[in-house]
Length: 504
Image 1 (spheres, helix red, strand yellow):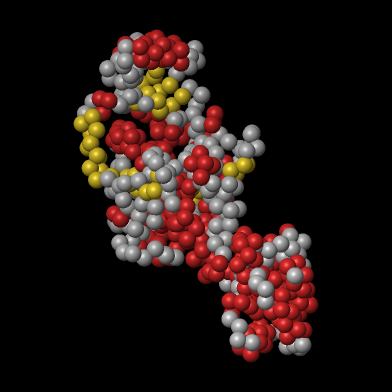
Image 2 (image 1 turned 90 degrees about the horizontal axis):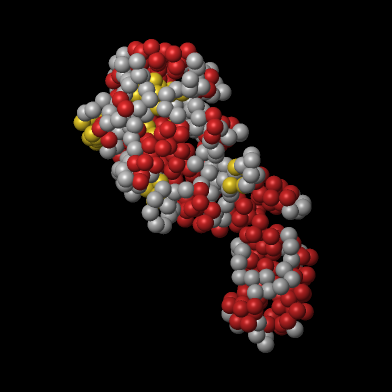
């Protein structure tokens, strides 16, 4: 590319960052890194009425947890600061006035009540009210009023908005993902660009900032595709070169139609936000992937494949591989269906790649919460035995609690199937064998019990399930004799005695 790539992620701090927004940030990040460009974080907080306390920091924390680092933006220095739109108000005013001077925009003094009346009047006729070329000269604006009256209203501080004067044409545009896009601008309204309170709308601030910050590619969600025509025309009105546009496909519900929403996560029991979120007003809690035990590597790998593929069957990619392979041309137009089981699959894979040292550290935190004290070496042995069965670190307690808490109840189905007339004698014999051992290693206890089975012409199915039931309470867990070694001689014999007393 002839010019340096510069892309931005520009969320609004109106609540927690949705998983779709996180994917948009990821794709911008990958594209910038692939081309040796810059990735910016800009906070678009022009809509102060919808501002939510804590949302901005949440966005920053979510990007940080996922390893999506930005080069310029809120909280960092940069040549184009400030990166928070509420701190750039005076910049936007001068550009709104420039459009007025050029005749590309106009003042509109219509009140909310007047516009609402017009909308309802159209609805009653089965029509839709659109403020544009069709009726703008019959409405309350500087195109229908005299210059003297307009100046008088402005001098009297009458509330106004500045609207874009939408031209009438068949507009042809290009989107990197969707190809040629054509629209008849007659169906578009004269969007509000600036309000009398001194705040721009999203559309003006977005265009001005992208131009001033030298953004070369606008990579954003499909929901912004209807705004593309207005943005392209605004660039033209200013006489600026427009960036290249790429509108990402929607992330769809796991079942049914439509975009994935928070309600879908609530109904089906999975997070739609990267981190846990507590609403500052209602105190309602929304689950997060981090708190649910997902690893950031798993979430990033999963999101990268929602709408993009590298062109083969491979599904596991490191961040470095994603950067190397990422290409906007390989993003699909069609929506990508969200699959919670797939992200669990990714998490299981990445959990297995973690070192036992890392997993032991996380496991010890869980044990501390359970008021369980254990030596680190023992904890690491347990982690090594159970991790293959785990999808999350949070699974570790369920997979290992029997190491610390002896069973007091036993799986009924297994007892009915396995506890026979000869079972008490078998347990009695195993107790005797293990009582006489001084070497209680996994290898030696296994060797001794197997020798007993062979000497008495027993089947493994007559003995091993009984021992597992005694130690665990059900038919789960790692190798029996690894359990025996970790819980030790005294605890092993105690548990065998307990099941013997319970069912004899």
